[in-house]
Length: 139
Image (cartoon, rainbow, N blue to C red; front, top):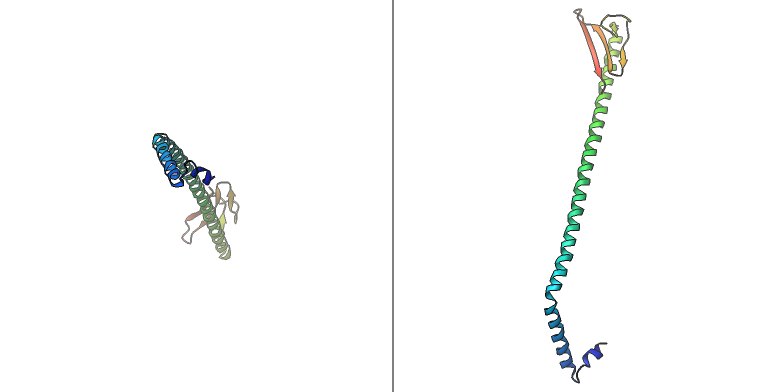
């Protein structure tokens, strides 16, 4: 194919120069259209990248919010387990030292603990005779 292009004139060098001149003229005349095509393609690519960046940012924000929710829930659960262990430890110590405790402030039902959906609790008397209450709250 190259030989055919260089055979336009009897001299291959003149054929090559003629083809270069024609190509330059065609490119010069098409520069406005080529510039428009290049600008349009680059603009479309830019918009595509902007959409991808917005989608990535939105996904990051959703993931960050979800991670925050999960971490807060895990922290609340861990806190509740710690509080329940401490509550049970207090009851155990009172039982060990044979301190009476009651589920309500009317002091009915000795050695009982109130456990319901709102939490746990009991009352006992201090060595000075004051009625003290130990409570936990469930979330």
